Amino acid sequence: MPNTITLDYDTESIQYLCKKDKRLAKVISAIGPITYQIHSDSYSFLIHEIIEQMLSVKAGAKIYGRLEELCDGKICVSAVKQLSDEQIRGIGTASSKVKYIRGLTDAVESGYLDFKKLETMNDDEIISKLTSLHGIGTWTAKMYLIFALNRQDVLPYEDVAFLQGYEWLYKTKDRSKAAVEKKCKKWRPYSSIAARYLYRALDSGLTKNEFHLYK
Image (tube, rainbow, N blue to C red; front, side):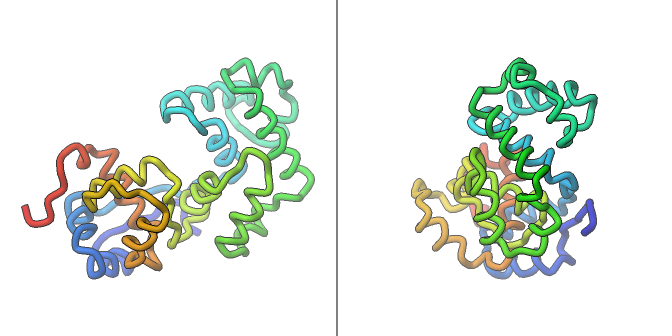
């Protein structure tokens, strides 16, 4: 799997989404081609997601950076195993998250969580496996599918940032699972790609102005 991927009008997924959804097509046109990196280190990615739960992106990044420093620049199982609970709490991590980090670390070390095997599983199997660990819910599992495994058809309706983009795009306040699944069904099998463009729309400030299809 390549670490860097570019999406443009020559990409099959972009051509498909533009045909299926006029609103999304306008967003894609406004943003243009996007290039993104695939997270190659599954363990550190999940540690980051655990830390960031219920925090702002800025706060999560700050705490994660402190953990990197404790691990001499490389967050890995062996480095985290050498840290005490007090050291991990000392960087600003809640006691519950220390337990989640320990649980994930033990699962990887024991072989219960084998990242190579995960790559061979389907999306539902991966979500089931990851959410069997304390502190990893469906949101975290879907972020892993999208950003670490580059799975193409994940609809992250649990994610606040995605929902903000969704409400803006479709001019709706109904963010229920049923409503989102119904409205976004046309994106399949490229729901993750559509989500990436909504994230970019949010990050670039597009969503600060009302969406107009024909303006």
